[in-house]
Image (cartoon, rainbow, N blue to C red):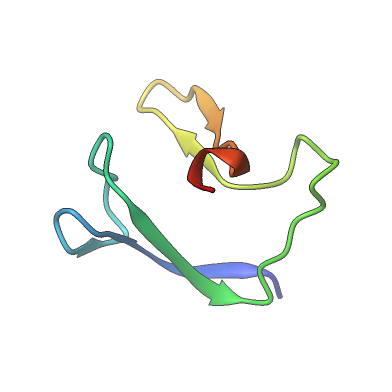
Amino acid sequence: MNTPVWFRDIETDTRNDQLTPGGMAIVSGRHLKIEPDDSQQGVFFISPDGTKTPVDRNTFR
């Protein structure tokens, strides 16, 4: 199964909570893969109002 196991906010050293704006994070799991040509796949930030923002993979290169 391709499911994240945990998420860690590096700035606050917390797991499975919120990401610090402008901070870095680690997503851990097994067999995590995406199809880069499918815009519905990948890592998304979801705001409290439900707005989904995809992480641009080129941002962190």
